Length: 114
Image (cartoon, rainbow, N blue to C red):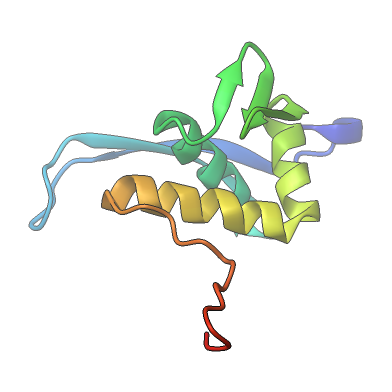
């Protein structure tokens, strides 16, 4: 991403050649931002799209049937502005990867007890 001609980071692809605890020759791709490090928002969007937690239709990215943003960079900015949205998508992705249903953040009160 180059706003106003300033380079703020790059998209990096790495290939794992040798690994003792996981299969070798796997690849990963992520954003490295110079003043931030690895972009958590970008990694979350990529994983959520890959595991169908977030829908990608053309350039548009949608979550729970609502348009989130047009383009990956705009979606990253939305997640930076809205930490609650980031947490909901992250929780949904964790639930999808673990195979367990996502826990509700609501507390159910029965007969005056939590």
